Length: 144
Image 1 (cartoon, one colour):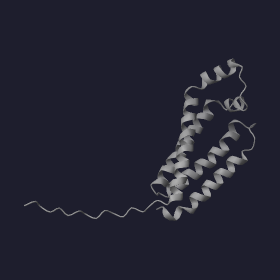
Image 2 (spheres, rainbow, N blue to C red):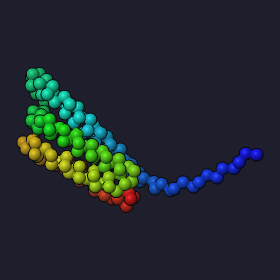
Image 3 (tube, rainbow, N blue to C red):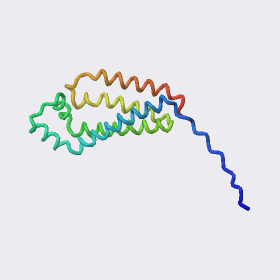
Image 4 (cartoon, helix red, strand yellow):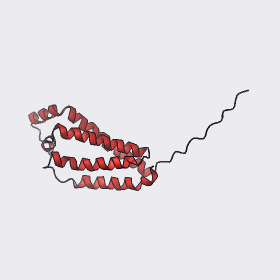
């Protein structure tokens, strides 16, 4: 006779709201691409500056961005990774992710003003950041 095995009931996992899923996917893409690009620029900063200055190609805003130096791109990489970690936590319905994400997004907005003060005021970036933070805040009741 085959022994009967009883299956233990599994803990109920709260379902992630669809809006939170959409926000997280968009933020994974944004933070992932931001992290990747800042890491590549950090690792190859000298080569990028040399190629850009010797190529004669004029890319609007490139000279200003490169004037931030390797430190700017390194810090940008770290902050983008923090943003990614925050989103990962919200994906797992952990409230701490909201705070990590929000702080890192605010830092992403203000970091250029310390390294590249000649950049224009990023009104569109501020609006997008505010919308995402507000939408994530509306999802806090689903997180623990």
